[in-house]
Amino acid sequence: MTSILDAISRAFRDLFRFQVLWIVVWPILAATLLWVILGVAFWSSFSGWIASGLTAIGIQEWLEGVEPRWIAYGIQGVAHLILFVPLVFVTALVITALFAMPALVHLVANRDYPQLKRENGGGVAGSLLNALLAIGIFIAIWLVTLPLWLIGAGVVIPFVAVAYLNQRLFRYDALAEHASREEMQVLFSAWRSSLWGLGLLTGLIQFIPLLNLFAPVLAALAFIHFGLARLTELRHAP
Image (cartoon, rainbow, N blue to C red; front, side, top):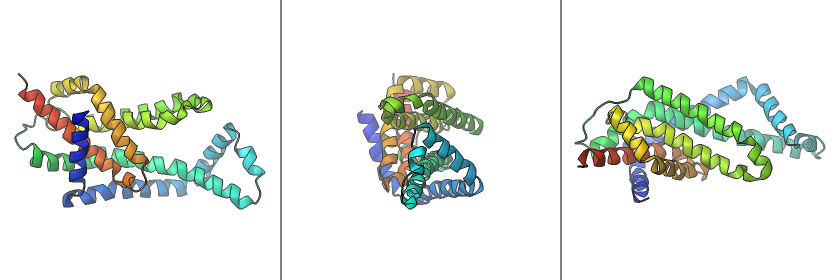
């Protein structure tokens, strides 16, 4: 637990470095713009899917009888927002993992781990494949666990899903430049529970208003610090 908290504290320290501030902003802006464009282009389709979902859980029929009508429209608008915000944050996480991680790794490594040799065990293809697998399994978690919402256990789904997504997205890219493939496999296996714990704690920040704007880059920094520190320990171990 100490290693997890140390990684998060170092991430907060680096979050407000001048070089990091733009990296904090642009993934969120890019993700928001992407989903605004998609929302406008496919508004009828998205609205139909949401209406189907509300019908499935018995809310749509109730909404049709709500008066005045602006209340019903307001509830439907909130449903759209509830769907839109997670899509933006998940997309921002993926953008950060794919495009912002190299710059963040260089910043952290040059300052805190300058003597750490680069073995280049990962690459662009591996990063892309890792991101696709992470998103695919993340979606599968939501689909498979949908029945849990009917018995009240669905409240834990967002936390499990985001913990998985964070640790799967960022652990690879945090180590890809410095660790060999063998070292990455060893670290992923030896520190599996800690990686999940770090994924959960950084994921919880995504549910805190305003602070969640920094969540993608904060998670990336935390995984970089955690991964490079564990790699250093591994190489110095007897």
